[in-house]
Amino acid sequence: MAAKKHSKLKSYLNSNYIEFADEQTSLRLNSLYSDFSKIHAVNQYAYDANIGFWKTIILDCNEQGYLRTSEYATAIDKTTIASEFHRPLKGKPLALTCVLEHMEKTNDIMPIAKFIETYAPKLSWSEWIYNKMLPWRYWSGPFTRNSNLYVLIPTIALIAKNIMSEHFKVPVRREAEHMLTFSEFKAKYAYHFVNELELTDDDMDLILRYLHSQQGVVVADNVKGYGTTYKVIKFPHKQGEVANITKHDEAIINIRTTCHALSLQVDELQRKVEEFEHLSVEEHRKGHTARARYYLKKKKNLEQVLEKRLKSMETMDTILMKIETSQDDIQVVQAFNMGAGTLQDLLGKDELSIETINEIMDKVSDSLSDQKEMEEAMTTGMEDVSPYNDQEIEQELAELIEKETKPVIASSPTIKHVPSSPKQTEEAKSAPKETTTIIPAECESQSELARLNQMFTSIRNTPINTSAITADKDRQHQLELA
Image (cartoon, rainbow, N blue to C red; front, top):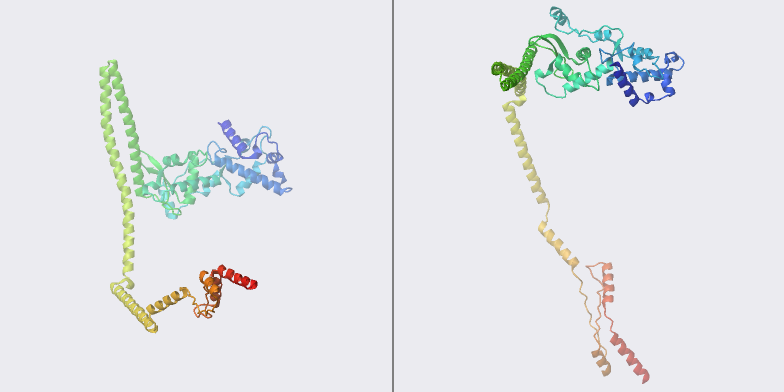
């Protein structure tokens, strides 16, 4: 077992820390395995670095479940821890003693006796007297007093934090769901709940002490149940509160353990009924009629007992359900009562009386009426101020737009004709008539730029009379010949 545990630790170190890799012969590893406690005054930096490294290694390996003792998964033995890190070529680390001393000063580790004393239940005077009269009220675990064992506080704190987070993962729980027996608590949180840790009963007692001191979880011994007494753990309803086990809680534990015992009995009876039925059939095949009848009678007797146990279990389940439902109903009724009282307090104030509300609503109605009259008066006043009609303004605007977009028609002035010869008259008749467009000098509806643009457009669009030009040239030629 020890060799297997050492092998797991070695494999974990080799895979997660380069300093411990196989065939590693670095100066760093030599320094870690040397007796560096003597260099404290000479090289403070190297001393602190080695202390910090070994502290990280010890805490990490313990949280992962690879560094532990046979009794505790959350503790180490200072006399054997050096052997856990033995290496064939390096031997044992020689300065772990000063590492443990440093960790004890920083409260990373604590002797188990000191841990039990530090995280003991804190009782008031009345609780102390009650505990003296009934010493079963708070537990006193069977802890070992080995002075060589050190509890690792970070590991305990990590497990406790995860337990509380898991419990409060469901935001609303019934009253009975906050309570667990020790066996239920162990079955839920002991095996691989955090990493590879396998917690023992002693570990669970240490964790419960820490939960009681830091998280308000209460633990009670010797709570009467079915056929025996139980250790009961109860979580607070909310984080930050302190739980308390009442007589009603003890009754619920009694019923729950009875239901659990009846369930186990039912399973066992069912198994025996099936077994006797099988034996009866086998004996009948062999021809042993008497034996077959004997097993069949035992089967029938067990079936009667089984039926009674099932009825008893059904009754206990019904009672437990009604108790839990009644506790929920009490909370609902308390909420109703608180809500009704708050509502009555609010309605009892002067601001919420019927007369006050009617008066306020009348004021609101009057204010709205006054506002409406003021808006109507302002609208009427604006209509009287303007002397123009909107329809007339729109009509005049439409006329201006139409006048602006209407095309300009050019007028043609009268042209005075000079008498000419008959030949010129014939040529003038045969030639196409030339039209001259004259642009008005002034146009009030257009700008100067628009008039110039229109003038150039008219010039470009005026056709050139080539026949008249040719006729003039012929007449000039004939005159020269004459």
